[in-house]
Image (cartoon, rainbow, N blue to C red; front, side, top):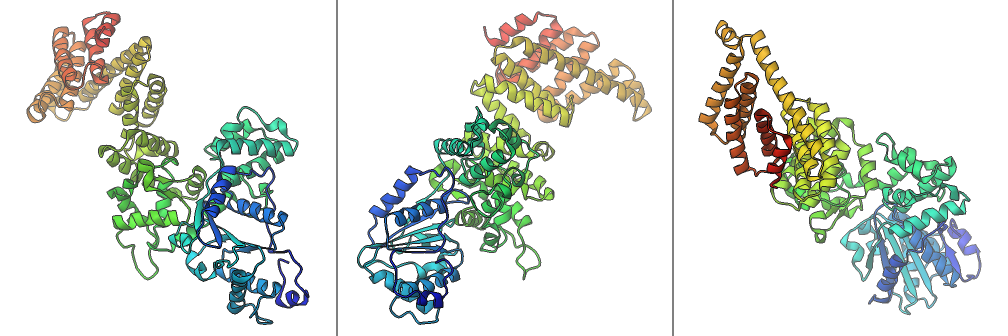
Length: 621
């Protein structure tokens, strides 16, 4: 009876019980009972103080809220409940129209013949309140809790009615009127794995299951909607889990290709990316107007497992939101965004189920599902990506200085680095990578530190050049990581290669100075090694006088001068210079700091001492 008109409803004659109104969705293939969630729903029903039992299933896109509601509807039909009504509640007008038709079907008192308006809808609600017949009303996908307020089914005088509603929203109005809100999240790891196995076996494609089934479920974020589309794609294309996971992890792959509409075998009706971002355009028009999209784009480059709320009060974030806020039509330019508005934008996204903002989660208060983040990034204009990366890097830098928990910052830096790639280096944000690497080294995580510093040093060399100071610093950290991992030969090789590069770079600088003189006086001064030494000695004297003997730039100049002495055959001067540098570094940085170790290596190299002797002294053995 999904599309009965009033005339058809009246012409049905005496009511034939039980009645089922509306199109109840079929249960998905390999439907998971989700006992933990259903127990939470049932406990909310059992503990309800109102006579009408109303549970509101709230959660983000694709978590399976409608399927859970459908399971309750099918259960009610099987148990012989007198009236089961399924209502598409995405628009309040549709709710009113459904109620009005239902009023005539159940022959509610005060229903006016030929009418389908609010009076008939109220007549139906009155019938629900007074009837002795059992009933279940499903309100699926409530998008506007405020306009729904007058249309919630009332308390049943006989205690024989129940309401189950689904929504993405997190508004306070949903929990008013004696209603209980039950949060619905993604599958558990076990449920996701069970779903994939059952789905593929039911299609007689067990050969697609392999060792990567569980990692694939994890990569899909255990999202029921995504798992459904992925399984259908694998069945259609005869692609095993390992190959699909490889495609999914490819940076060039798009969600609409990996989870296409033709894989929508369960009838969800839209692309996964579109389903995840369904409420974004509406949220963009709500107060604070114009901030939902830029705020979500910034959140999408951070760790899906969570980042601190404090990030939304950082100056860099405020400036970004101001610059990329969509202007209100009546204004000529975006109004400056306040920190209060920035946090209001966060709460707006939370209310529309686009992310989660939970203060009780501490430093991981703000979470965004990984697939939602990916969908957002894929729809972010390329021209905005650079500024988003810059903003995220500056915000994380400020949080780092404020002492936010390092483990949280590490995972957020990793997420930003994974998305940004070279952009992080172009906006001068790569210092975050060094901080993370040093934390790994400091915590004694040698197994993780070695590949980390290998990657950072390789990227630095590719982006900045082999002789850039930041590349040299990264390679020093790599050498220390090798030492901590017991790979002393690899560490010596790095120090030796870097020493040769430094000497070569300094020699090239002297040659260029001789070949491109600024004046006749400089030409005569720089045409020999002694001229280069004099230039470095003058520079050192100026730095010592202005910056002091222990300033890092002063020590760097001493190191360059020591190399120049050594190249000029003045070994004793080179040794004295390096010993002084090493003394300052050991006192300020510690003997195991990468700079101290590199200087110790240079000193032994100049002295001609054996590497093993330097290693024993530096290791403190």
